[in-house]
Image (tube, rainbow, N blue to C red; front, side, top):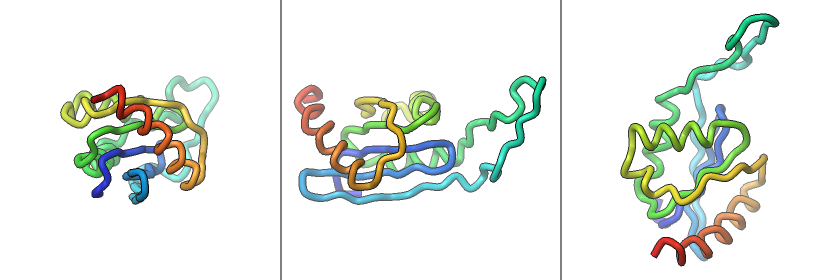
Length: 128
């Protein structure tokens, strides 16, 4: 991507990565192809139904983040913090460029682009 700021929205099934500038936006979708369609939960079984982190999924996301100067990671649930931890452990150079991690539900692409532009307009001044 040719834009300098990256906005990542992800859950455990897919990631939407937006390269955002003042007048342009590009989107890349990454899907977790290894996740089962449905995890059955059983009563009285501790930790059953919790899928382990898919390293190939996070590696593919990290590969799409290599060109960004600043990165914001968002999404519902725990996937956003798991990605941030994975980047810290396996991709420390990318992790240093993560400027924020925020909880966000399920916005549309236009809502993501607008939020990214607002966020980076302010964040750029803080990270100079």
